[in-house]
Image 1: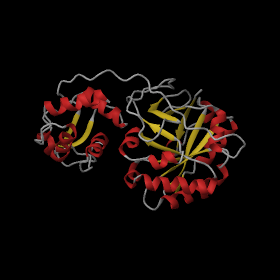
Image 2 (image 1 turned 120 degrees about the horizontal axis):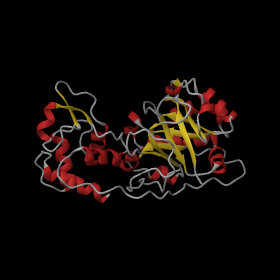
Image 3 (image 1 turned 90 degrees about the vertical axis):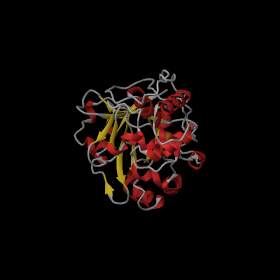
Image 4 (image 1 turned 45 degrees about the vertical axis):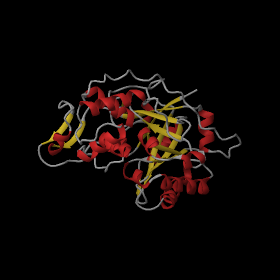
Length: 337
């Protein structure tokens, strides 16, 4: 049994939920310790009036403490406790604070509400950090990974890679697109599938309501994608597979790379690696994810240090140049995941 749903915030201020198909909606309520989304209450009231399941989430900033952010969230969502599912959005700058910060949030929120909130993160973050403490607390996972950036409607069996979810046994909710298109709204929406029915949703929202708490579901991933050609060229197919593996936006583009680093990236296909003539720009999320995996400095720019750490990770000769042998080894590694 599963349900289809969306997550929204002030960025979708003009959405008319009465015109959009969904079984559940999760709305941004707060951020850090100083921001309340003023559209949240209206969204929740409308969805509840339509008989749909609701949830509220807190966007962590990582700038204070997990306890302080949980208390701020609770102070602003007391009226939803017991009827709406609760969730922690763990992305952006908060990620670098590590699982201990997130666990402090989840534990404090549980003390305040009696509810075990879900935690939202990308699949790459699931695998890049040790989440065993959070998983041991039986906090469910709301996970994100996108096959590509093409517009899509709801999917019954969305693609996900077979690399697992780290310490978590499975996903309670899976966000598989940020470019969803649904009738009734002229814009992109985050699309999700919840691996539960309405009764299980209610137990997440109100575990003291008389029924047993839902166990964290274990979801079987769909079939693995086709094997990459091991051709030594870091071109569109390899870029897309790398982006999909790490759960970043899948657009086939490695953005904002400094021209000065091109000399270290011999096998980077010019058609999808975006080199800037001047300056550095914000870098690439895909490159940042690779840097975390390889243990390199995390700046989003693929240079000599990144290549050396990549080569050490792959067990190939470390010469600081991403040539065909290095890329072939990376393609083979991706095929093995």
